[in-house]
Image (cartoon, rainbow, N blue to C red; front, side, top):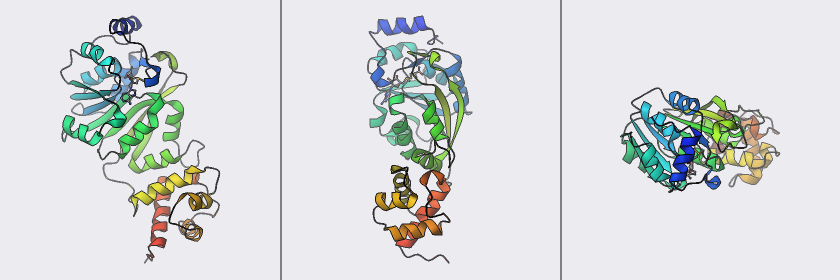
Length: 293
Ligand code: SAM
């Protein structure tokens, strides 16, 4: 395995390929071998699994993934890195690099073409300018990933792993709870990257539910309620939903909040994913005139 964490090697590869660290692509490469090694070890137990990596950079984490798993497909936006990756990953026959923007990729199609019906997990040191959209895209794709392990800014990790009532709890926490459970694995200081980012990083593993844990009567309504509840954080749920949820008047919302067992002045950050599911079901029942038996 090439030592892609050695700073001199990194600089030599970049110079030879005429590359500069591109801030606009969130390029902070790992330079401490123990970090990518641990991420690869902790992301998945099953060596038969396939891995989708986002943003391989010069292939630092990719090498560890290729050593450990049966197949790795990595999507990298920066065309300039592709020849370098051809060189750094030359010894691995189980790696494929795709030059594309992950936000433009049809994830379902990519997974079908690359891995057919095999088990797949995601593993990535994500570009920080676009962390949340990438995670949301992965969650909302119709792909049954086993897990999603990502290194992200510490504050985003705090948000993903918060509990209802915490100050970090937000719409993304409640939405993520629908798909699976997130746990923090470990924190990584800026000095482990070149160039060092301005913030601490945390590796988070999201274990996705095999079968849905929550089954709202109307999934779209459930997500709309969460979105509206957090759109104006300082408002009570009643006011936030009255102004942000179309098709429901204040009386209906007030009744649904009460029937779901909450006080009239409850705020969104106190409701768990299960609570949002129940509240959206109450709204659905009230609107469609469904009586509980
Ligand atoms: N995996 C390498 C490592 O750990 O050292 C590099 C990680 S670096 C934080 C993020 C990588 O994501 C960069 O290589 C960057 O070019 C790539 N990237 C940024 N935006 C992307 C996008 N929209 N789609 C795919 N790759 C992207």
